[in-house]
Length: 70
Image (tube, rainbow, N blue to C red; front, top):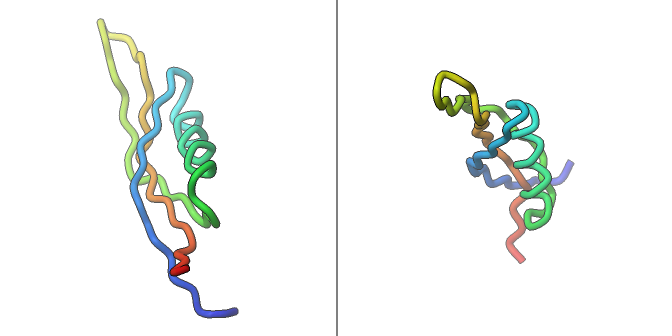
């Protein structure tokens, strides 16, 4: 395996369905602009609550991608 360098960033996704859906949206969107996505780690999950009901799920991911110095 050749030497590689990876950059790690944090991204937050939201969904009115689930934490998993919020994470999926993060990766689908990030994949449109970031090349060579490698690993996503769930950093935090929380809920938005209004009038005693869950109205949104939020998932913060640490996403790594290969760093190219071109």
